Image (cartoon, rainbow, N blue to C red):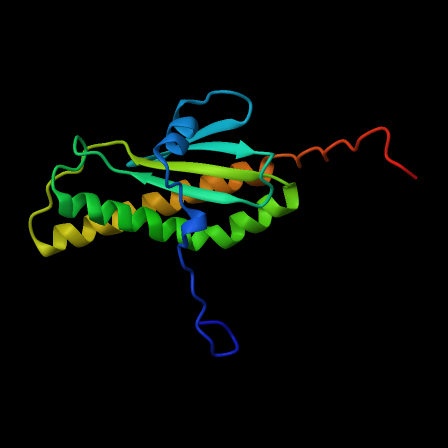
Length: 161
């Protein structure tokens, strides 16, 4: 809750999501000066700066069956990644707005999950996944913070006076 007694809502609206398969493909396949990759123990993030879309931020989450066999586990991992992204989105949007950049982020589970048996093991796994997701998002924020501001768009030379 904030100081004035109102709850602060961190929603994950559609405008913050990578929806189309083609958008995912562009982020994952592109390798140039506008892209960077960050890794943590369980997760990896492929990020693509978008100078043509200042102040825009979109996240995509992918969890394959190869790394999380059960649908319950895939849903858990997606929920943890979305929650971490949702909590970091306001800070990232501010930084991106100041730099005149946009950013697309593809978040993926990169290592197979161990099958957790009892409640204690499941809680420990959830804590480990959340800590790793938060670490990854912190690394993305750090990389964006180090990014220089985008050059302003050049005006046409023959602007009428």
